Amino acid sequence: MQELWIEILLYLFFEFYESSWQRGKTFQEMLAHIYERYRRGIFYFFFSHPSFYFALYLGLKYDLTNFWFLSLLFFKFMDISYKLVIVKKIEENALAEVLPISLQTPIAPWMSYLNVVLYPALLIASLQS
Image: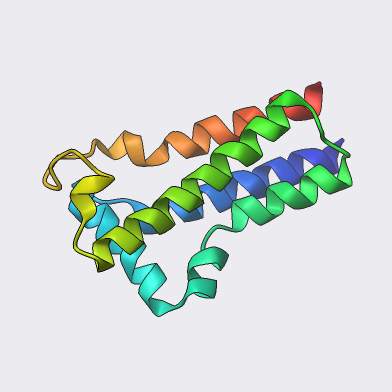
């Protein structure tokens, strides 16, 4: 049981890491951080999402196939996929096609950390089911 809580804390740490490199005061700042990771290399971009891989590890270790865990994987996959779509649109100068709001829209500091609450909650729910 103690090992499980350590793994949940580690997952929480990975989510904090992802939030820390993505956060910005505006959408433009946030997208600039995401694009910078991608520009360094596609593998660097993928490895900048360690919580996805750690979730896969936990799913295999604890044989998680319930709704909560599959929801967690779905949201994480869609998050990474959408970031890749945004990066491609930035390169094509067609960002307005996928992001219909102003790039100068401010982002509240707490919004950058929604994933730190949402994804560990889904993980805990999946482990309890």
